[in-house]
Amino acid sequence: MSAIEPAFVSAEDEWSPLRSVIVGRAEDSAFPSEPEHMMAATMPSEHLLRFKPLSPFPPAILARAQEELDNLADVMRKEGIRVYRPNKVNWLKMQGYTGAMPRDGLMTVGSALIEAPFSWRCRRHEITLAYSEILSELGSSNSGVTICRAPLITGEDTLYHGMLGKSRTNGNIPTSRWSINNSRPAFDAADFMRFGKVVIGQLSHVTNRRGVEYLRAVVPEGYTVEILETTDEHAMHIDATLLPLRKGLMVYQPERVSEHELRQHEVFHDWELLACPITPEPRQPPSPPMYMCSPWLMLNALSLDEKRVLVEANDKEFAAWLTTLGMEPIMVPFGHVNSIGGSFHCATVDLVRSGAKD
Image (cartoon, rainbow, N blue to C red):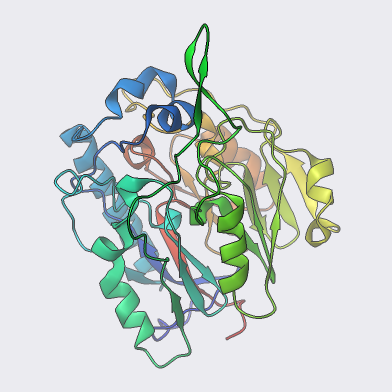
């Protein structure tokens, strides 16, 4: 791989050779705390009692997660990839969540780095606290980078208003398929993926239609945003539903989206679309609990280029199948990062992929 690139932003797909990346940090992460109906809609039921204010993740899990993230950064550097790391933040003290999942809050589209207008209140200051120094460096690099900061929320946030009704028999019940209304723009960047000039995303419990409209307004000229119809009742982040491995080849989670629906989008008309044939099993001890994710986090892999893909060290059957597709899996331990809410795609933001046009 060539020498490290100067500081700039340029990426328009998920598979071109990775040159520059943000890798998250796990220290002092805490369970997110949002209204009960949001947590019930998005989190595994067996762990719901942990999602309350000032509830830290177990220290031993965080220590191992930080080691895994540091190792991932080292793996990237050895490949000649420029690595940025966020500030260390005491998320428990700040009543926040984590700095380990930068993909949720930042998205590169061409030469723009777009900050997500989070729906979760506990994440409202996440980018400012952890990533402002990175954004300042990139924005002052005289390389044509556009930094799109999320709109400020002033006064009361009304995103949850009216989202629960009363049932005569069961108490509070959701009044909508989703856990947020449309009173302001909201999305998580991890609900979107880049396929050249087309960005594919989904509506979810954290992404609303006004959020999609906002994203359409801020992406660079020439890019479009299209919405994929999924059947996932717990939808939150599309990167465990779609896994584009290289141009023209994508794996998808067949319980959440169909090939027929994917084919409705012109960008996929000549792609090989493969339903994942492996149903992942829940991890058993001594693996740490999956507090926030389903076993389908297996699909949250990360292509370093059109051959090499990062795969969690436990997902050996999945890795073996990927080799039959011509991919070269790089097995990296990441189970403790998985435990606190994501895998390789979640824990990174690709700033430069060399296939993108500057």
